[in-house]
Length: 186
Image (cartoon, rainbow, N blue to C red):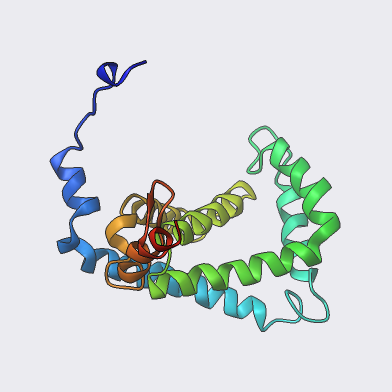
């Protein structure tokens, strides 16, 4: 395929306005703060709990996993069989490791979102955790956070504008465009 065969399709005006216009950065800032606060509070509760990170690490997660495994049966299971197999064979034997990963992951995602640092990446990992909680049959606030994180991922260019991304992205760049720091080393 030559360059003549490639045609660029322009972004719709509404999409460009919502996800690329810095005038909406305040909206994304508020959304970022809400989602970040939810992750920080969840992570902090786990990090300060001995059943998540302390001397009994993995105890709480083991109870959560066993509850999820109970939801794999019946005519309309809340937890898909393939995910139940993953929980049974991968997570359950390693609850202490996963307990630490979850607790610190929640806290780090929350901090990154509050600071507006690597917002799109932080939102992606938050959405990944939300999807895992949903796959495990826990609804709670997970669908709402997942929806908000999808919007933050789509608005990654401006979602961190009122945060550290305003400075980090021009310095570090993106995978497809070098930032100021990397241009100097080349």
